[in-house]
Amino acid sequence: MSRLLNCLLPLFLLSACQKEISPELANRAPGATPLPAAAEFVKYTIKAGEHFCDKSDFKIVETDELKFMVRFDSSAIYQTVNSSNQDDINKLYGFSDNNMQHHQFSARFGWRWSAGALRLFGYIYNNSIVASKEISAIPIGADVVCNLQVTATHYRFMVGNLKDSLPRLSTTAKAKGYQLYPYFGGDEPAPHTVSIWIKPLM
Image 1 (tube, helix red, strand yellow):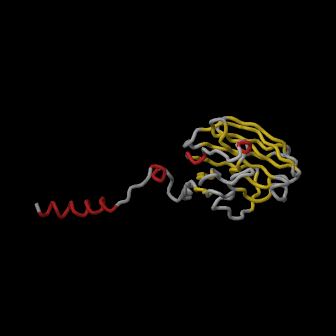
Image 2 (image 1 turned 180 degrees about the vertical axis):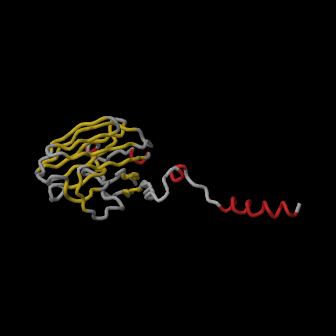
Image 3 (image 1 turned 60 degrees about the vertical axis):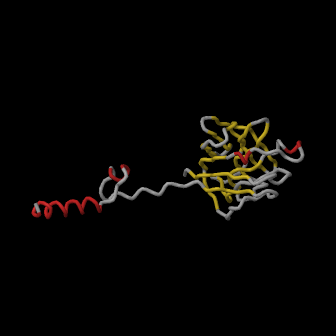
């Protein structure tokens, strides 16, 4: 019996020390490049009485596509002090363009709570002239994929399977500027603390 235990004990210890391997790694060829870590949601917070979010590091952007996933919670439901401001579009995520300030050239998604729904918009500046289009209403708590594509003549906004476009007058081959982050307003600051989660997808 002791001889049998002496034979089985090393095998037991060897199996007990092995780490569990995920199916993704198990199926990869030996020597293959490791898979990149999946992007995580970043929580952006706009405090009551503020316009700007808590995370807005300066980041240079040169791209022809911005793709991300967004999630809003119930803090996206709000009522403005001045009822005429309820239709103002808050800013979500995007970039300045044409190597200019964002109030001159830019493209980003916007959002607002109005008529009982959370609505996403395409929102742009061309030569300091603002324009916007509603793309889709989305559910509170849902993870929604947004995609902003840049062409020589248009910005293409996609929310899930819905899409629309707005003109682009920038002359750079790609969008060229800096990252734009969540911002409340419009004229009024956030009436209460608002939380938004964003996960970059490329």
